[in-house]
Length: 188
Length: 225
Image (cartoon, rainbow over all chains, first blue to last red; front, side, top):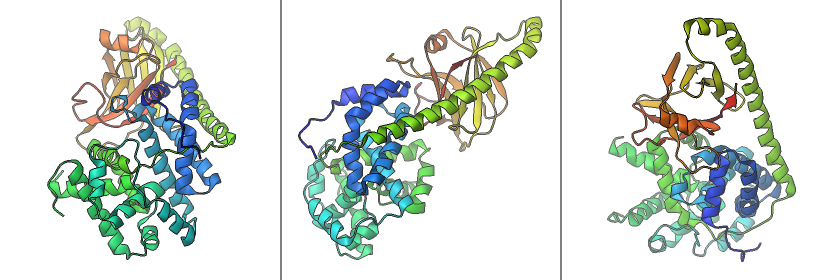
């Protein structure tokens, strides 16, 4: 995997998306060339199998073409908008394939990999501070869910924690994150 | 929304955006996304959780992926063209049948452009005709479209390809029957060069801001009659 190449400029992606909304097939191809390696890598991370990730990638770009008109250019976040479509699409495919694609040993490996700090390219202000306030196990649960697309059950297995605890860590973690990011008073 | 409901919906929105809302619960929740309120809760969570996004990596997808996408979208385009052609034929037959009546009554000018608001290759909800030199728009509600109470469907002209403007409203859509509406100079200007119309979900009186505020439910191409 190549991590060194810089990201395509947001403004360029936003313009391409607007042209896609106007049904410009050339712009769609240019958008695909610039972003498909990033989305494919992201899908592989969640779906693991290349054949499934390829199928997901096709569905993702069909959705991007169909929904380009809903992209709100003034909000920016063109790449984040496309990554969100890819994440949701991967979750839909997991549902269809009833995926428990990988054994526990592989999952454990993944858990180690993702133990580190998230390195979001579109972080809200104060995110690092707020995520840092959460207990380690909560942060790990949120990362496994968001980055790997793991379900409550899988996370419970991976972290060898009771399912009920995982659910309540996640619920409380999300609430604390919202309160901290919006500057609300902490209640927990 | 009551504040207790709001908390519950926000919790579901959070788990939807995180990805832990699964199976039937996820599918049910997706149906609520047409509500602008629920939509904006999900969007807020997407923005909050974006901080968890790992640094992007790159893996080149196989060439077959693009070919598959091209094929799927071409298929859709063909379906669309077929429907538009059928509408065009139907419209010109109608025109031939009624041209005498129109002439005698000095009534509506002939449709010059048509659009069908429909599910991809499926049900046509509204048939839209631009009359004469875009002096008026005629809308025929062909099959009822689901609509919650207190909401309305609004029709928009999307900016012409390559131009930077905003969508311009052509007014609310009828849920049944047929309407004919004279267009203003501003609406005619927006239509010049435009190739697409869109339908958004709005509060019952129409968008309060003059721009689409709810989700865009459909986009339809304007085809020459």
